[in-house]
Amino acid sequence: MLNKSFKNIITLVCVLIAVMVVEGFSQIGSGYSRNGIGDVLINPSVRRNGLAGLGLASTDQFDVNSLNPAAWNGIRSVKILASMRYFANNYSDGINSNFLASSSFESIALSIPISIDNGINFVMGTTPYSKVDYDVINNNIIDSIGFKSHYSGDGGLNKIYLGTSFRFPFGLSVGMSADYLVGTINHRASVDFGKTEFVNTSFVNEYKMGGFNFNFGAISPNLERNLSLGLFEDLRVAVIYSTGAKLNTDSRELKFGTTEDTLIVNNYKTEIPFRFGIGLETQFSKRFRGYVDYLYQNWSKYRTNNQQDFNLAALSKIALSFEYLPSAKPESFWQTFALRFGGFLRNSEFSIKGEKINEYGVNLGFSFPFDQINLIDFALEYSVRGKSVSYLQKDSMLKLWVGINFAELWFMRDED
Image (cartoon, rainbow, N blue to C red; front, side, top):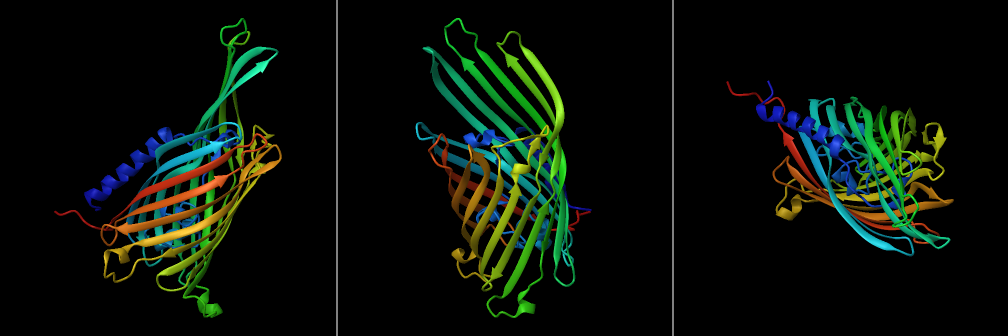
């Protein structure tokens, strides 16, 4: 029988997943998120966020990487991870500028080792997949008639995943997860003429989405043993593939202030494109590792109600990062720290008026332990996206993640 504290962990994870699905969306403040399903988030875990958001080939016994289920094969104890995120955005469109900041509870994951020798782990968790948040107010004058237009949106999709990993005797690790994408997206628009004979109007569009896709991953054995390059202690390649998804979409369109208030209800499919990634891990010494990663998802293939969104394009991200591991026999407190740093270039999923929106950034992360198996993780990212010309928007974004990383010993028994 599992001990009582472990039972409490499972109950806590299930409750937090339910809360996050209902209330997991907080404001992030970018006008680009009015397109498609919003900003596509690539934040697999706090520790991976310190590695520029990827690190696909890393097998970390202290981490649950939601992008690559094959990476779970190295987890050796029951793990529960939970994280929060602080987001700040200083944005400008060349005319107006503003600063927005918010914080939110972001993700939670639970990993249970079934067979440590075979790398079999059962994993469940939830993490944001996309977020919508924008709030734009314009003052306009047409034929000496002044009016205010207001556009806003919120919501997004969460990913709930359930999967497992396995390691073959010759060192190849594989994994798969079933992912359920679910959430609500709201878009609102209104025109306010003030105290005139014109009628103020407003529109509200609500989209409730849900559907499955599947995520597969593989990490090679140590290729240095076969290649004998003499440059690395360990060399591994990782591949991930996430299938496309067809989300059931219930839409409600409400119109107020027109000749009569109306409600239009519809049901159709929203198509999410597949995702592919490849990563390389190099271990230069027992404590120093490097990573090179590439991720691709063609959002020009996105369809909702069989309609294409022409403001979407192919997303690609390339990242270079490094990790300095703690000493196996630390002689000081500082030798127990893990340090991560890196940078990335991202061709975003947005293309506005034919202008591709690009992003570049740097990342920093570190971890320190409470004891041998319990830690706290930090990650920091600063990035710049777009530019403040031609009615585009420049986002200068700062993200801070804080995660708790707890472990529970497996197969402990209650006392009689």
